[in-house]
Image 1: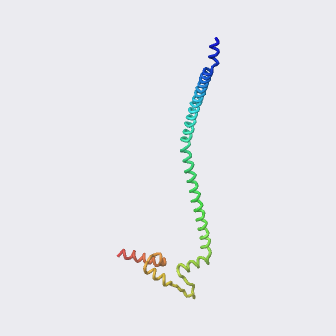
Image 2: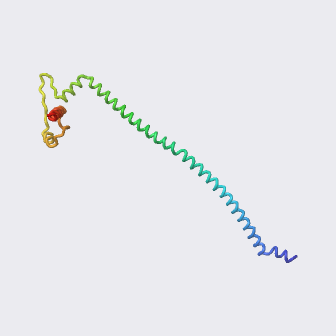
Image 3: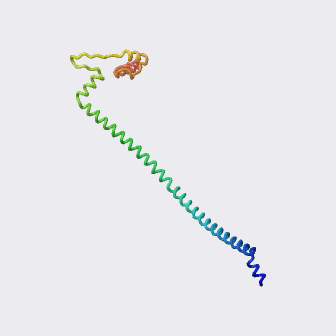
Length: 158
């Protein structure tokens, strides 16, 4: 019995027992970690699946919402531009209601003069040279373009 007791308390026996106990603890902790990992992996996969489903379900409505907001912004911009144009036209209409403004514009555009006045047209020599080279319809008075159009239409009938 003394040999058994001595063998039980020997360093080699104690180290062997300590190693076996440590190995058993490591094995148990690895098994627990793997069990925990597998549960977390399943949960993570389920969470990922739910998130992907939500993204897929909400992608089309969100895209529609964004496009409709852009369309609304564009329509508001057009409405604002139309409102500004209406205001400009109202101002122009109000100016044309004034006889002095209408007279001024008629005299300027049609080169009208009042009885007893002498009309002058000052021609810029540089503009004359340029108009001879370009001969554009925009450089001439509107009534000259009208008469040219009538002459061309009359010539086409002959």
